Amino acid sequence: MSGIEPTTEAIISGLKKAWGQSLDVRVSKVGNRMPETFTPTFQANEPPISEQWPELKCLMGLEWKESTSLQLQKDNSLITKRFCTVIETDDLKIGFLYLGANTNFPRHAHSPEEIYHVVAGNCWRISGSIAGMKPVSSGDTWFHDSEEEHGLKTDDGPVLIAWAWMGKLDGLYYFCDTPRENINCNYVST
Image 1: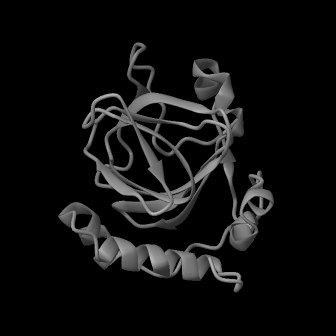
Image 2 (image 1 turned 120 degrees about the horizontal axis):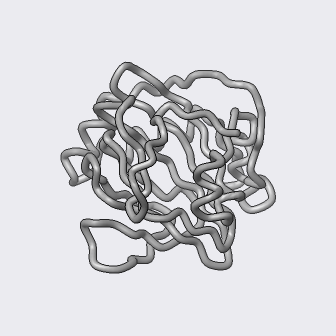
Image 3 (image 1 turned 90 degrees about the vertical axis):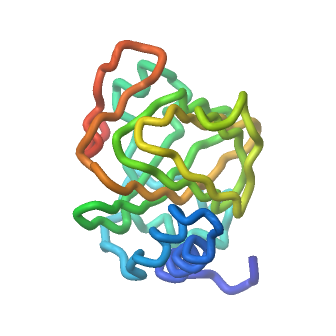
């Protein structure tokens, strides 16, 4: 990145442009209808973004939520997980997900369709649409269909991902290898 520190608005505008130009029609459709303005929130539970990526410290001023107790029971490494929502309409949510080093976000699924876009760092992508795990890094974008199994795993460094949910935002959210103990898609952290 250049020496100029971007604003949250500039990062969102960059996502809108990248997604709008995607060869995946599902991703470009979201990019082309994505607003460039975001919902202001208050600073809370911020991940150590400025330590890892000082050029992205503008994102520290957002309201980040922590993992739920159900998620922590599933995998205690999710203690590093933070996420926030910056754009929300009736059928679209966009935000950021931070996972620290050595974090396993186990296979899960949910009703909303989803886009993941690696903003910084790298991790392993786990998905029902690919065999095994696939390494992904800054700039990589992919799409999850509704109820498609997926997860993420970091090694010795963190990852920052932009995400978008489309469709049935208030539907199911559950871990795939346990009985469907539903987490409401609008859950709040504990």
